[in-house]
Image 1 (cartoon, rainbow over the protein chains, first blue to last red):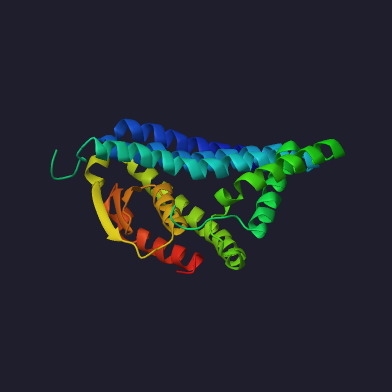
Image 2 (image 1 turned 90 degrees about the horizontal axis):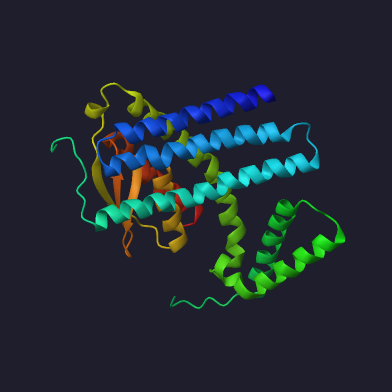
Length: 105
Length: 168
């Protein structure tokens, strides 16, 4: 059980690292949001599932409830994260920021 | 909202049940005091705001929609995983600047209901590589893609799937 949990958390951290590196490497505002808002969803899913497995321990009711609460965190982030990303993109578009493209840089 | 959205008894009962389940989950205490406390607060909230959670009065169709929606989630998670790995590959690629090709794409969605459109927009945004910028009142969707490949097929497949879920 603990091995599975650790592996999942490590995969999650890998996605988070990718997100952080992506924010630095991408060329402009819009493309930066792709790693910023999205790799986080997978990183969060993986690391939270890992924590849920870890919290499950020896399957008592209290521990199962803790795991379910952790999974609820993932559900809420999956609903709110795209909305937040969309709000940021919308702000950029309304401000008239042109996206970076391959043929114009 | 121009539509009539008065909550029916059925939607109040369903709201109450959902909220009570969440109460049980979050409190984790099953003695009489906490159960009664939860039941009273859930009943109050259900009485005041059942029309926020279930705005459509179309109750008989709801179980089918929910069931198909639950079946849709694993597929969405799989797409999110695939797309995540794709963006990871781009991010760590040494020649990233040549591989990415950000574009703004548009298409007309045939989804009619607000709920289906919200689901579509959130699904598109949740999948890395595509971000919904705007949905017009008539279902015209504008979205930003990180490279052509990400945006070529997925939103259309997604739209078809969501159309199935909401029976449109």
